[in-house]
Image 1: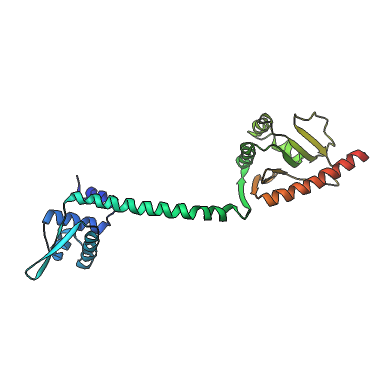
Image 2 (image 1 turned 180 degrees about the vertical axis):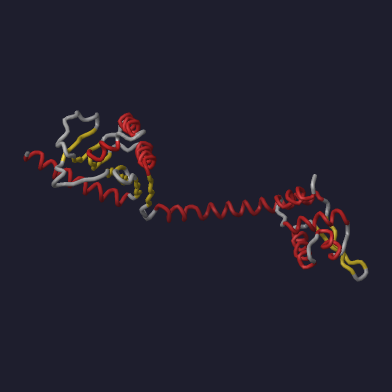
Amino acid sequence: MSKQKTEKQLQELGMTENESKIYLAALELGPSTVQHLAGKAAVVRPTAYVAIGGLVKHGLMSHFTKGKKIYFSVENPETLKKLLTAEQEKINKKEASLSDLLPNLLGLFSGADKPRIKLFEGIEGLGAVQDFLISVKPGHVDEMVSYDDLKELIQLPGQKEHEARILKSKIGGRVLYNNSMGPRTKKNAPGWTHHWVSQKNFPIHGDITIFDKYIAMASFGDVYAGIIIESKALADSMRTMFELAWQKSNEIKNKG
């Protein structure tokens, strides 16, 4: 086995680079002075002293005095197991600290209902927004959409498949829409109710969908992009605004 590989393995056990070099030098030389160990490990003496201090602290090296000189020697390599024990103790302490800290962090993350926003770009981004809607499996959605814009989007690659997946998922809801052709005559899909509003009086572009604690917004035309806002407070407010618009569309429909 190469010396470099052995040093790397010792470092994986928890030694620093210089500790691994001094440790191997001490194994090869036996009891030695700092000067000899530093020369063998190819490090300067101040660095050797620091590395020796770390090894002594780990219980992997000891020293004795002979004459006027201090000699350092390594303990039996079996004592390397102490490094693993020390590393495991560190991991256990960190896990315990994380267990205590995590509830507080999660509380900060979600407790205040801080809006979280994700942006998706391109046709693939719009598909990702649709896939997210399906994955949430909401029992009900409220949607405002321009069918003129949607008609162009549905012709793009993959969009008919996404539309089919949404219908297959059995998601239902209400759709407030406009288009240049007037109210649609197509029969509603099961679970869906559609209200038409005048494009002239109530212009809508793109798509806004409210479901669960999310608001999904899509831009069609020159720029394709989708945004998902996660916030119960904002979703509830948008839902209230949709309800007002829905009731107004009912009044207009009844007058007509």
